[in-house]
Image (cartoon, rainbow, N blue to C red; front, side):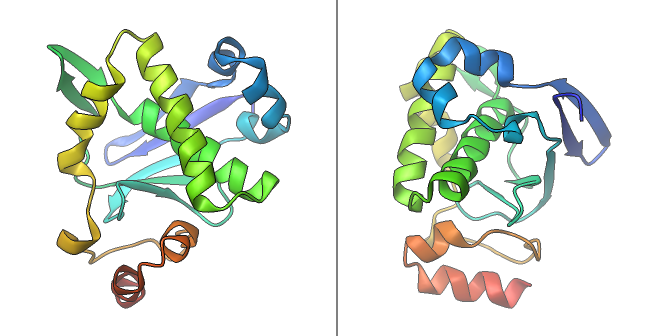
Length: 174
């Protein structure tokens, strides 16, 4: 497990370099927060399911799930932006903060969003434009079609959001 990330895509698997180098540039406070080997572990990205809130993770954190309707790239401010790397980064940080530092979902999500937006800005994309571009894909609970969800999807975000209707739909889909 040499610091590689594997994105499991419908057409096979592609290896990408670890985001650890990027973390080194983002700041010492985040590095101190994530002082485990967790970011060096292999993680699969699976885009074969309906994932409420756009993305999620397995209970063990070894798989990041992205909604099957989420494209790999979006046109943002005239640029074709590969969004899945940013979302992967967000989900990994969020899961680590919940599991290692026992943050509740809302806290972990807030920190992960901050670092995701920092990463987006470092790449020359406006975080505001990035978030606006994602809005149509963020699967709001009121409009959600949840038919296929992975059996090992971590339900912490949905439980912490107290979204009982969405939780019932997720449980029925399993």
